[in-house]
Image (tube, rainbow, N blue to C red; front, side, top):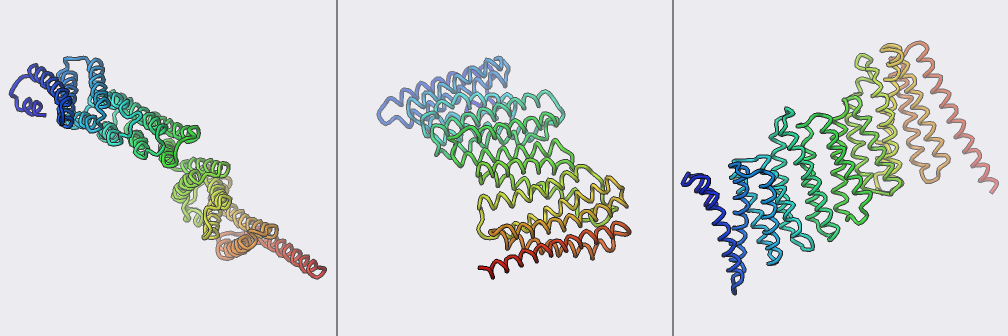
Length: 487
C-alpha cells in the first residue's frame, strides 16, 4: 500500500514502481517464511507473507491492467497462480487469517490500482475466487468463504448497477462475468454444503452469487434478460428436485432464488394483461407439486405467486370494469386470467386443507378464496360477454350468466354439504352466504342494469335453482327423520 501511495505521489516512474513492488513483495514473503520458522514468529510470519503475496498479486494486476505491458490472459494466469500459491501456503501453515489477509488486501487495493471498477478487475477477482477455493475444502474456514465471495459479488453487482443500457460490447463481457459468478458461486457453495450440511455460511454464499443475475434484468435486451432468469430458475428447480442431501435452509434459499427469477422472467416477458395468466399458471403448478409432494415450501411459494397474480389481475380488471360497461374491455387475457384466478383460489384452499397447515382460521381463508374465485369468474364471464356481444348487449348477457354462475356455485356447495360429514357446516354456511349474495346481486344490480330477455332469464334461472335446492334439502331432511323414527 505504501508503494501504491508513493506511485500516486509521482516519486518514481512505472517501470521502477513495478520492479520495486515485485522485489519488495518477494522480500516480504521471504522474511515471512523465515520469521514463521522461528519460535514465537507465527503471527509475524503470517502477516509478512500475506502482505507480500497480496503485493505480488497487485503487481501483476498493475502490469496487466494499469500499464498494459502483459497480455490480460497471461496476467490472469499468473495472478491465478499467485493466489493459489498464497492460499496453499496458508493451508500448509494452517492459518485462515493468512488467507483472509491475502484476499482482503487484494480486494481493498485492487480498485485503487485500476482507478475504480473495471471488467478487468472483475476478471482478476474471479481468478482469485477460483484459486482460493481449494483452501476451503475439508476446512471450516467460514470467514475465508465470506472474504472470497463478497468482493466479487459486490464488484459484479456494482458493475450491473452502473452499466449503460445501450447494448455495448462491455455489456456482453459483463454478462459473461455475471454467469461465471453465479455458476462458480453456486457450484462451489453446493460442494461445501455436500461436505458439511450444517454450513449456514455456505447457504448464504449460494444466494449472494445469484444476486447479480437477479439485478441484471434492465441492462440487457429482453430476450437475453428473460433467458438468463429462466436458466437461473431452471437451475434452482433442478437443484431442489435432484440434490436429495440438500439441507432445509439451503433448500429454502435455492427455492426463493428460483421463485424470484421466475417472477422476473414472467414480468419481463409478458404484457400487463397476460402477466396474471402466467403467474396463475406458475401458482397452480407449484400448488400441484405441494399437493403431490406434501411440500409446505412449494405451497407457500405457489401461494405467493397466486397473491401477486391476483393483485395484478385486479389492476387489469378492476371492480369498476364489472359495474360500468364504459370501463370494461373484451380481452382474452382477462377471460383466461379470471378462470385461472378461480382455479388458483380453489387450489389454495383445497391444498391448505389437505396439508393441514392451519388449525384456526381455515374457514376465513376459505371464504377469502371463495370471494376471489367469484371475482375471477364474474370478471371472466362479463369480459367474455363483451368480447362476443359488444359493450351493450355483451355486458348485460355477461352479468346474466354471472348471476346464474353464482347460484350454481351456491347450489353445488349446498349439495356438497349434504354429502360431506366433515365439511357439512362450512359448506352450508358458504352455500347460504353465496345464495344470499346471488339474490342480492339479482335485486340490487341486475334489476337495474339488465333489461328485457336477459333480466327474465336471470330471474327464472335463479328461481329454478332455488326451488331445486329447497326441494333437495326438504327431501334429505325428510329421509333423515324417517330413518330416525324407524330406528
